[in-house]
Image 1 (cartoon, rainbow, N blue to C red):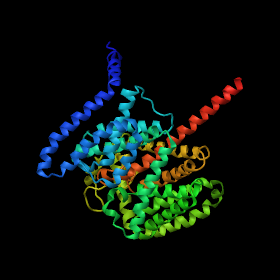
Image 2 (spheres, rainbow, N blue to C red):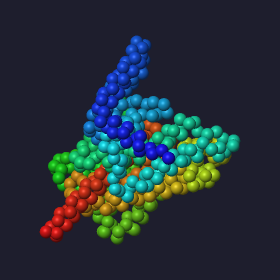
Image 3 (cartoon, rainbow, N blue to C red):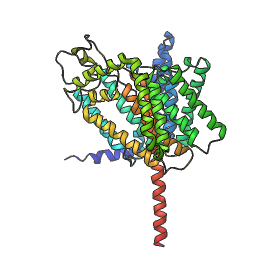
Image 4 (cartoon, helix red, strand yellow):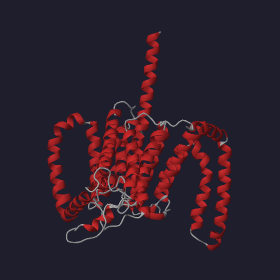
Length: 476
């Protein structure tokens, strides 16, 4: 029997010893290759010239990302808001950045450090299982489930799989790369600054839309996590100066004004936002709110039933009809699903209010059931249960100031994210609905939830150090 390690260890050792040389060679080759392509493109005046220039120029940042990968994560988030690059099927700079950072991270672990180890967190297993199941479901999606219907194009199926893999990848990147709270603070304040510029500019009538990518800001996750972080830092971060807390509170009010007053018809905006704020307040004052909860629930239910549902009965009715049909389609393969994007092409086989045609479920949870089955939906909900429990566990264990406010914001953001998933596929965008462009904003939820695991590692490390000190003191 051939021992693979006999061959792999010398190769890994050689790669590790010559990594800098290999990086330089890769940069030179890429630059020469890019130049060979760029010359004729520049002569023709093609738009591809700019894209290929950035592609070649970006290689120079490879070594920097190897040294400071968190910078790449922050730049990827910023680029998603401002760089309009969009490739086949809507593949965009956010997905390209996360994919590149994942490659750098794996390269660092496997070649340079030669130690592939994931952090110890209960949030990781359900995500790894979801990734594994997604790959299996992708393979199952190639089977002919319906004789009289076509499959989704292979590029659409790959795009759907990429959304799952890159979303989980973004979470893992933050959980593993951010080992210093200061980087988490920088990531948060940069996002809040970008959000503040957009909100203030939009309400004041400034032409900010010409600089922002619409798919990045017209997404429920952008508004949900913006209001969660702004409100929580304003209320719970006592280390901030008073005027900064006032500005954050004003930003919270402006977000509410934009969602509830200006865009009330867009329920994917204000419903998750209000759910988010309620969850933050409840998690801070849960003992007293348990008594008030029944009295608060009655007016909320009455308001939602009369304002949100009764004024838009046709929309809700068609959504329910779509859910039932997609669930019926998913019953063909209920355990592992039908693969990515396939159910969209099976819907014409069913009558939808007397018509036939392709449509979507407009629900994250129905999409999960149809694409990755009951098992995939269970892994998804298992993860949210674990990340919610982690946030609850961290409330009183992180230090006061930014960290504690961040934990409360994450608890609200998790609830708001779950609420948004009921309305539309905002969390894991469906290829034929929100689309791959929606990843520009949906990735924010995964990034900021990953920040909880980063804080978890800091708390556990500090607890372990204190335990070791106590043990040494007792032995002495």
